[in-house]
Each structure stands twice: as C-alpha cells, then as structure tokens.
Length: 452
Ligand SMILES: Cc1cc2nc3c(=O)[nH]c(=O)nc-3n(C[C@H](O)[C@H](O)[C@H](O)COP(=O)(O)OP(=O)(O)OC[C@H]3O[C@@H](n4cnc5c(N)ncnc54)[C@H](O)[C@@H]3O)c2cc1C
Image: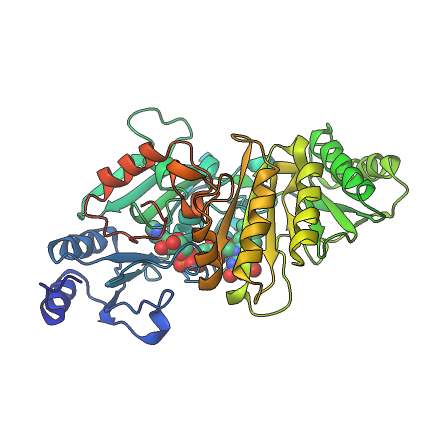
C-alpha cells in the first residue's frame, strides 16, 4: 500500500466491492510479507469489483488457491491484498457429451474429480487433490500422465480472467477448436499470479480408463551403467507402440538404484496384455527385477529428502529425453562436487525431473550444484529452474548472476537477466511486454518472477 493511501480508506473500498474482507493475519504471510487484507470474492463480478478497488487504491494483489505452494518462486516484494479463491469452488457446467467442463478457479482438484467421475470422466492431470484449478494453472503443474495427455496448457480450452484494473476478459470457449482472438489461457498458464486473477477455466476431459497397470523395474549397479540402463528403459518405454500414459523415474539418493515406472491404461484385457509386453520389453534390456503391480509408493510425488519441506531447494529440470542419461550423470557429478545429496524423480519419459536438495545446504553449494546441472543442458534444449529455495540459497543464486550459465534462480545468464519460476527464457523482452500490457502498475504479485 502506498503511503498516500490510508488502510481504513482502502479497507472501506474493498468491503464495498466484496462481501468477504478481513484483516490479514500471520497465517496469511507469503514469505515474510503479511498482507493488510484478505478478500474472498464469490463470483467473477465480485472479483472484478475487488481488483478495480485495488487499482484505485494502488494495492498490490496476490491470488491464493489452497495456499500449498505460495512459497514457490520469490516472495512478493509487497502484498496488500491476498485474494482467496476458495469461495469460488463450483463446477459450473459439465457437458459430458462434449467431454468438456467449466469450473471456477477456486475449485479443488479432488472435488472436480469426484463431480466428473459421476460421468466416468476426468481432467487428466495428476496433481494433489487439495490444489485448486487456479493454482494448478498458475503454476503450470502436471503429474505423470503429462506424457500422454499433456499439461494444463494442452487441456485448457477456455479461460476467464480479471485483469489488474478489474476488466473481465474471456478467451476460448466450450469447443476444443477455438481460433478467434488471442489465447489468453496459454499466457496465464504458468503466470504465477503475475498477470491477473484466473476466475474460471474450461477443460477438455478424457474418459476415466477402465483399467490401469504399473510396470516397474529397479536398476542398480555402478556408474555410468546404471544411468545408461535407466535412460535406455525410459526411452524404450516412452517410444514403444504399447502407448504408455506415463514413464516415471525415482532415484532417492545420488549414485544409488534407479526405479523406472510405466503406467498403462485402457480396457482390462488390453492393459493386461500390454503390461506383459512392457514387462518383457524392460526385462529384455537388463537382468533386473521387473514387476506389474499397484503404483509404487513414490508415484506422482515430488521427491522428498529428510527435514522440513520449507527449507528444501526444489529444482525443475527439463531436457530432451535423449539427454536423460547425461542429465542424470550431471546430477551425480554435481552431488559429488558439492557434497549435497539430492533426491531425483519425475516424468523422465516426458523430459522432466524434479530435484530436491536437503534443507540446511549452504547457498554457495546449491548455486554450484545448479550451475553444474545447467551446464549439462545445451542452450535451447531445456532448463534447470529453481522453483523454491530458502532465502539464503536464493541470495547465493542471485549472487552468481554474472557468471555465464549459473545465473540467478532461473538459469538465464548475463544480460538476459533472471526469470524466476519460468527458467531460462529466450523471449524475456516479449514476456516483459506482456506483463506491462496486463499489469502496467506491476501490482499483481510484484517481484514473484524476478523479472516481472
Ligand atoms: C507431480 C506433482 C506432485 C506434487 N506433490 C505435491 C505435494 O505432495 N504436496 C503439495 O503441497 N504440493 C504438491 N504439488 C504441487 C501442487 O500441485 C501445488 O501445490 C498446487 O498446484 C498449487 O495449487 P494451490 O491451489 O495450492 O495454489 P497456491 O499455492 O495457492 O498458489 C500457487 C500459485 O498460483 C497463484 N494462483 C493461485 N490461484 C490463482 C488464480 N486463481 N489466479 C491466478 N493465480 C493464482 C498464486 O499466486 C501462486 O503463485 C505437486 C505437483 C506435482 C506436479
């Protein structure tokens, strides 16, 4: 809140716009920033009035879904109003015949899933049930089945947003082929709350599969055979005509065994037959135990290490799948050089791994680790972004900004600057222009993406 605006005056304006406004409390803090107000609109119209009031009083705004990942990215530089979306939790329309659903952005994934399941359908994103539609879109999160169904970007066909000045904008609609106008949905996917408030989204749905099977293999041995073998299994499973829905990898400790898991979905008979073939395919690559069973306990999770999650550093490493072996070797080498013990896992078959580094790791060691991993990924063929890190680590990462290949949270070196959640961003100038267009006053989650 600017010094010009008194809290009482701002509070009055917010209360006139929205029927659910309260003072911010310690529990509402994002990083160390406690908001002055928390407002929970019940409709797009109320959200619009609310953001207009925020614009008129120069208030910085931060959208919040379930609040589970507000620690990702850089804490906002200022935050006057948290917009709590949990009152907007309805499935507005489920057109089962068209395989399309329109939902409010505060709806939790689990609630949406149960509503759609009555017609045997789903949004094919495996993210935790408490997460909201808006949070999943704003963080661009997808789980294992991204390999077959894509990410929120691919499943989103329409969106309603409220811009920073309160203007309501719609894009797309209820049909899968929408061609007219700018695709605002794609801009807002991954925007981390910095462009505006998502209030509604329309998704294409898929039928829930009748049967599922998980084929898992455990590879162990000495480097580099173990990473080479795991990479060969991932490539074989992802490229095979057996149509895997997901090909995941788990390595809880550097240099240790690697588990590869493959999900097959379809009719009961078809899945059973394809699972047997997949078992044969993986088994033919190496003499390792391969089994068909329920999902392994590490499935669809972000890899964990001991200690409190708030203190961990979490990286998202994306790469061409053909480079998987090299990326795993680079992570091992970085672990040896820095003495850090990362846990690694994720959608290897889709070219994405999460790397969790233990809390308490010295910032300088984490910065060296990140630099080593980034150096293994050729320019334009992936990125290694730090999604979340404690303050000391963020400071160390920012301090390396001048060194080519080891810059900032995002891995973008030198003049291009750093790009927070987004990773290495070749089109940084364009993204800045988009930000300026949607939020000229830079009041939406200011500072969240370091460049925005
Ligand atoms: C494979 C996988 C496994 C995961 N496992 C876990 C897990 O075990 N535990 C866990 O807590 N999380 C896990 N996550 C992350 C989880 O999916 C996120 O916590 C969740 O998507 C965030 O939703 P949220 O409603 O909590 O968003 P929030 O944390 O509230 O917000 C996240 C971001 O989105 C912005 N935002 C929220 N709503 C809107 C909106 N309506 N408009 C614009 N911006 C908005 C916020 O400002 C913030 O920047 C996992 C993710 C994946 C992909």
